[in-house]
Each structure stands twice: as C-alpha cells, then as structure tokens.
Length: 145
Image 1 (cartoon, rainbow, N blue to C red):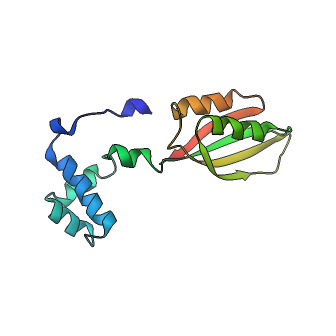
Image 2: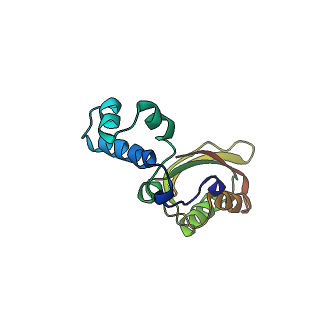
C-alpha cells in the first residue's frame, strides 16, 4: 500500500496540483458554494479538479482521520478478542466500532472500524500480525479511507 505513494517536493510539480488543494480548501471552508465556483477561484478547470481531487493530499490531511475496516474470524475462546484489542492498542490503533456475530461452530466473525492515523508501521504488517495470533483464523482488510 505504501508503495503506491511518493513524497515529492511541490517545487517540481505542475502548479495545478496545488490549485486542486486550494479548490478543496475553498469548498471545505464554505468560501465557495460549489465546485464550479471553487475551481474558478483557484484558476483550474472542473475536469482537472475531478481528475486529481481524490489523489492529492497535504501531509497534514493524509495523517488525520485515516480509517480502515477489517474483518476477522476468531475462535470462540476466552481472551481471543481481548488479545486482538491489546495488540491493536500496542500498534497505535484506536478501535472505533466492533461488530461480532454469534459464534457458530466455534468461530465468530468480527468486523472492526479502526482509526489508523497513529498506526506504527504499515497496515499490511498489522493485519498480518493479527492473522498470526492464536485464535485468529483469518484477518483481512475490507476497506480503507
């Protein structure tokens, strides 16, 4: 996942990347009522805005509010869910929601929404670590924001 990103100085990028960020800021702050107004004020076309709006972020915005949804199949044994929660806490992950099904044939499906803004290490490594824990039969990423 981290291999999809580069850290690049904005000095070498075309100026319209920064203008996309400006248009987003205008929309978020309410200084522009709609996308047409925001792109006009920023000095870019609507197509440029829509092409890049979901791919360009400042380091501050990329580090805050990152969410992930994971699904796990856990053995119905005392302490398994507690151990998973302790591991997530040790990794710097904040658990936002937990949904657990009733155990069937000794296993329960658990879906968690996580705040991964403070995650130490990569999400792939965290999920692999969870999957390797005693009592965790399967752990997988469902979605990420």
